[in-house]
Each structure stands twice: as C-alpha cells, then as structure tokens.
Length: 631
Image 1 (tube, helix red, strand yellow):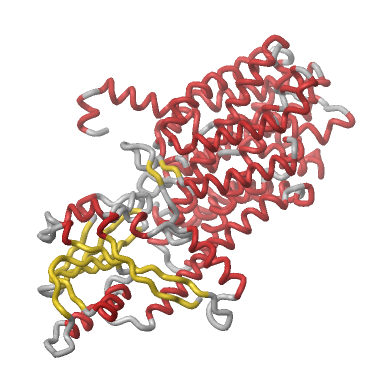
Image 2 (spheres, one colour):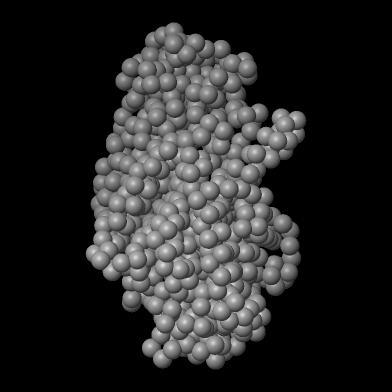
C-alpha cells in the first residue's frame, strides 16, 4: 500500500473491491463457464447404458479434487507467488529463469515457446466453445431457435472483439458484476438440487475419485479428458496476474469462485442421480422452466466474459513476446492511464477473431468443439509445471529433492490428463496442435531471422571508439560540421550504428552533438525511472545513451529523453534529429534461411510498425535511412 492509500483507507478499500470484482469477471470468467459443458461431456461415454451412483459420485469427486489440486494448490497458492516482479504467465516466468540460467538455455527457450503457443491456441478455442455452449441453451427454450444458434454466436463474438479497444478496465467494470451474479446463480442452482440426493456429498471424499479411476478402465481415461474441462482458464489466471494482483485474485477464488463451482457440480450430480434423463444437459435442466431463458441470457453473458479472460492474457503474452524478441514490434495501445498492464494489441485481436470465427464455422457445435479442447490447456499446464522446477531451485533456493517431491505428483497427474486428451486427436484434437505448431514456427522463425540479420550487419561493424577517433581526426576528408543534435538508434551499444555510417557516407556531415541511442529491454517487467537512463560522455561531440525498459514497460523514448536534461545532457528538441535505419529484407535462397522461412520472416517483418512509432519518437524530427539486407 502506498503512502497515499494509507492516508485514505476508504479509497484503498474501494480500489481493492474494484480489483476483486474485476478479477471475478476477467480472471475467472473462463473457469466459471466450465459447468456448462464439463459434466455433460464427462457423462457422455456412459450415456448409452445409463449411469450408476458410484460413477456419478466418482465423476463429481474427480472434478472437485481436480479443481482443488490444480487450481487451488498449483495456481492460486503457488504459481501466483512465482511472479517476475508482479507479472505472471509462461513468458514472464521464462524471462526470470533465463536471467538465472545455468546452462539449458535452449531447453528453457523451447519450453517457453511451447507454453506460449499453446496458450494462444487456448485463446482461440475458449471463446468459440464457451459462447456456443451457452447459446445452445436456446434449444431448450424452444427448438425453433436451433437454426439461429450459429449466427447468434458469430454476432456475439464479433461484438466482443470489436470492444477490445476500449481496454480491460472498461470491460471488467461492466463484466465483473455480471459474473458475480452468474456465480451466485450457479451456487443457488446447485444448492436447490443437492437435497435431491444427499449421497452426492460423498464426492468430497477423494477415495470415490480413486475408485472411479481404478474401475473405469479405458473409458475412465477418455472421461479424464472431459473432467479436465473443469480447470480451463487456469493458465489465463496466471497470465492475468499483472492486471489485478495476487491478493484480489486469491480472495475472489476462495470467497466466490471455488464455492460456487463446487456447489454447482454437486447439484448437477444430485440431479442426474434422481433424474437420469437430465444427462442430456444437466446444467440448464437444473433450473425451472420459468428461469430457463434468463439463465441462458446470463450464461451467454458469462461466456462472453470467459472469452475476455484469455483475450487479455493473450495481449499480455504478445507484449512480453515482442519485448523478448520472439515477435516483431507490433502496435501496442495502452488503455489505462494508471495500470500499465492493461493494453490492446490490434493485430493479435484480429488474429484471434479470425481463428475463433473459423473454429465456430467449421465445428458448428460445442459438442464437436469440445473434442478439440483440452490439449492446448493440458499442454500449457505441463510446460508451466516443468518451468516451475528451475524456479523453485534457482529462485527460491529449494533443494532438487524437495522440489521434485512437490512437483512430481502434480506433473504425473497433468501428464495423465494430457494423455487422456491426446486420445481425441483424430476427433478434432489436431486443431490446437496445428495452431500451437504454427505459432511456435512463427516465433522460432522471427528469433532465428533477427539473429541472422544482426550477424550479417555485424560483419561490417566498427567499434564506436574506433569510429570516433577516425571522424574526429583532422584531415582534408573530414565531414562538414553542422549545428544541432543528432540521435542515432543502435541495436548494439558499443558499435557504430549503421544509420550513422550511412548518414556520413551519403551526406558527408557531422552534427555538433551526436548521441548513440541504445534501447535495452531487461528481463524484468518494469524498470524504475531511477534506472531508466545510462549516459556516457565519449568525447566532446559524442555521447552514448542507453535507455532501459522492462518487458512490460511502455517503451517511450521521448519521455526518457526528458530525464537526460537532469543527467547533464543539453539539447534543444527543435534542433534535434532522430536518425532511424529502415531495413528492406531481400530473400536469398543461397544463404541464410531456407526459402520458405525467408518468405515467412519477411512477411512477419511487414507486420512490424515503424520504429519511430514504436519508440514514440517526435514525428517531425525523424530521418529514415534505408538499406537492403539479404536473408
């Protein structure tokens, strides 16, 4: 709590309440819609010959204990503390580990890329499945609406992606209270039916879950894939840590979300035990006929919110990937003046929308799409558990034996769930694998291509000190002196930037004051302003300026320049020119990348925004000098 907040406890409490309600809407929107389809899909393998009491109780027990072990223990109590200066998510954890890596960089890199790619796949499938499953409730209101399920779903999804530019804060203010009502309605629906058969309360005994697994055989493994649908959204919970903070997220889980989910699953189980025909759609059949339409509307709103959880997580992940060098510099819009974690990435929003729309049209129903779900979620969870091991040993200093004893049971459990979901590859499970594979290929290509470009440009590099000695030597070929300040962007701080060499080669001039500017992204989320700039005077006419940002910071160089005056750098912005290099990439099949990867890398480079826009340079003070690079 800041000093200001301490002096105004009511304001601090109000802020916490807003974050609490907002986290219910955004962070838990996804996991909060799992009751719509999870129990129904888990019952499906038994539908042909009816279900027995022990099977229903065993299934509900599995669901409650899966929520307890994976969400409560792993994510809410453990991973929310495994943050990188307040930021969560796979890439945030990867950045922290790579700072402390003791070898195995390649393995860490591969694991991080895999987890990030699987999460993007999850961000495409979740909105499609959630919205379809809610809108399909209209079939129970009146069968005449069956033909309108698909167009209504597409319209809702289009509206959701259109409002993303308003920002997470604006969206969560609207969605949070609605989701709170949704959790209350789910809890009341469950409470109303638990009395149908009190034997369902035996589900709190984990022995029923173990008994179900040991006696169900191969069918039990298939069912596990559906049971895992109860924890969809847990990775988004971790990725959204920076949006709301650990305490509001934890409080929301224990106070509202977990009790509501447990009560609803218990109610669904008791309903099926008493009325076996309810296996068709146990969630909606929990409610009386008069309440069906309001619940369908509320469920639709809740699934829109569920989609919001993974969308905001995808925006955070994309920004981290850009600053860590896994993606080109895409446009990032900051949607809050007080919270830097709340952003909007237009290109990622468009990519997700096209992917979601394609999935809805191809699969057409939540039942068909449910078979494609689970692989991306379980895969991402396994990756996070793997990354948690070096975190415990390198960051928290745990012994390897103690870390293994804690993580191995969880890892084995998640691998069993992953194996269960892999059984559905031929029924649509290939979709998240294809999506994740494509995203991984793009990230790997960009990282490989940018490294190749740096190597090719570096062959002609000259050290900055040698360059200064050369140009300041008095001779008849010395460049002409011109007044003002020139700022040259450099990718390598100790080398003379190519744009400086090109300016000297073609224009034959040297400014009175020259600043070599290097923007460095550290592997921490935020860099305090006291550490923002490093200014080194190299000679009377040359200075080296390094501007430090975190991978979650807005990389605004103009604001950083304002700090330079305090550091003793004198310049007039109206007589300062910023020289930026613009590279045209040309495919060269004989060297560098393979032909197909050349084309992919060049296409990705076209998606990058202008460096002057990305770094917020003064628009009327920028000079661009181009060069061609063979890749």
